[in-house]
Length: 406
Image (cartoon, rainbow, N blue to C red):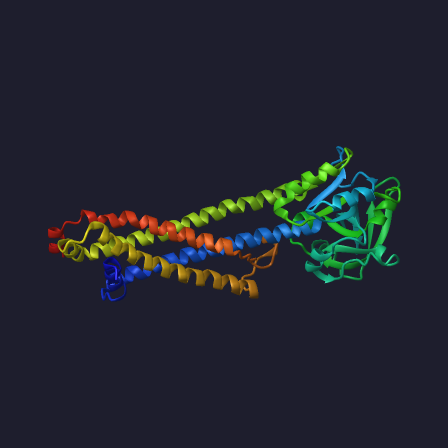
């Protein structure tokens, strides 16, 4: 058996010194808490970013194609739907879906109260999957029903609470134009994305109503809403779509349409880096303190080993092996701590949030094995490398002084 490993094993598992044991336990707990908090921080930030991003994407799509003009109002400039263009864009590998839509502002009135809204018109090809996940009550409009579907309206919980509405209630929407138009609707369902830019602004109905209100031609729309297969390749998808569009049309990504939200999400990466750095520093300081105390407490042993002919590097390895054990044990407990809380939260949503402040009612978790491996590898390497410096203390200890040391 390797001499340094044998001695390290004896002082690690056979030592009866209560003071060093206390320091060792504190070091292990420090690594456990540091790694556990890092795992939790990364999982929560990833989950939070993913949840917000999926909500925004679910409402507005990953990309929109609109008329290339100077119109910046809430009402789209119309253009003719082009089946050939739809086929070309749909053939792009990154594009998974393309759906027509249009928007028109109005004022919704019910029970003597009014609220400004924007009607988003869609057709029966619209993807309702994200809306169904965020439904509070009722159902999404059945636009395949040409009789009742055209009168159905999906509203947000914010609007429903302000106007005291529920599914089945009848409302009126006033569209300010020349001449003014008034249309009645029946509430089919109530959604809540938890995002002010959506909940406080939009209601969803049939695109054919907007078409008639604006006196558009039957084949005119306000734009196309596109979904991509890989959000990380959104910019590449945007370039590919723009290459297929005529000069009168232009594609914009969801990040172009909601810059404030995505800028805020990007800031979370900076906060995560700060947390990870602080946790690594705490773990390193704990390990350095523990190793220095163990070296000082074993000064007599170091002197005897040197007197017997042991080299400085051999003695250094004794304490490095000892530190390796502490690091591995602390990391094992840290993984159990961090992953255990993540699994509990993922399954039970025990930790709740205020939707008004955080856009969701529970702490989201997103786990990736690559994150776990990188965190463990980084923690292990950093902690082990910084141990080399404190272990150099043994080179300063002379045998005569060390044996006399008490």
